[in-house]
Length: 181
Image (cartoon, rainbow, N blue to C red; front, side, top):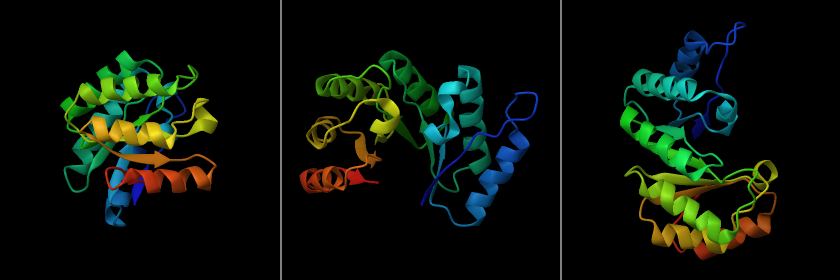
């Protein structure tokens, strides 16, 4: 189980690191397999770069290698997603969760280029995140498998589409090169 963490805020709008620490420690105590920080559940698109960096750094330090920390570094700008990914790697994250670029409605080739560029900027394992209801773009099974076969550190996909048929096709095409969440 990978726990997607919310980002707690105080009434004054600052990140509540005391509450965040309690949440992280509870997940470890209860046997969670991995922590996902600044994924879409943590609403990083509404956070400043400084807040994102602080949250990832805090999670890495608090978890202290007891379980993996997966940092959400996706966004709608490929260059910024690559920079965020390098930052998370530098801070000690164990892996990355990279959502498809939202709003832009990239083509399938554009999605391939996006993931190739972002994953190519780091050595960490990358989990693609397909959530078309939120991003406005659907990462098709053929494209996801093409990415996994051509980009060594893309290892998995978090498939959050509404189509069980698409998920089944993804599993069938994956041929063991792509873990499916």
